[in-house]
Amino acid sequence: MLTAEKIIRLLKLKPLPQEGGLYRETYRSALNVSSGAGIKRSVGTSIYYLITPDRFSSLHRVSSDEIFHFYLGDPVEMLLLYPNGRSRKVILGPDVEKSQHPQFLVPKNVWQGSRLIKGGKFALLGTTVYPGFDFTDYRQGCRKELLKRYPKCKQSIIALTAK
Image 1: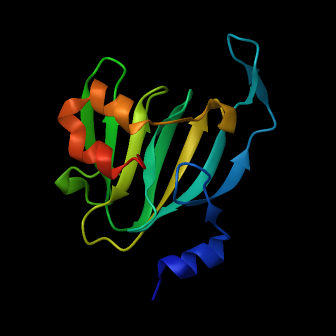
Image 2: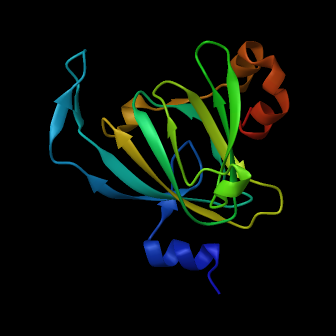
Image 3: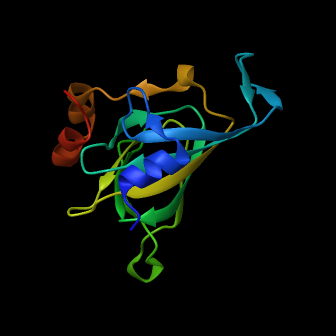
């Protein structure tokens, strides 16, 4: 039987700093692009990403588009908080007949956080980031600031932030 522990071992996953969950980078393009500020980034990167009931993706944002891929396990609820004040929840999963998304794009600078649906044991996802991910582009969400800006999402924000 496939378990989270077995996936962690087989795919050599390790804790993802700040965000939570477990990951391993699987690709980083050798080609680079320059941002408007002259900062060089890899054209693209990809990772494996695993979440469990006690390891979720805390609210954060990155300065690149990020495509999520659902590989296996239980469905995942993703909260998106857009710069214009709008919010949205989507379910990443295999059941497209129930409006689950096996692939989903999170645009750059959108706050995002994910957790298993209630009762889930694990989910193995992947992400592909263009331009490539760099830890200097990562911004951790602050509960107090996010609650002030998105009060209608209070319960989800509390669940997806540390304090």
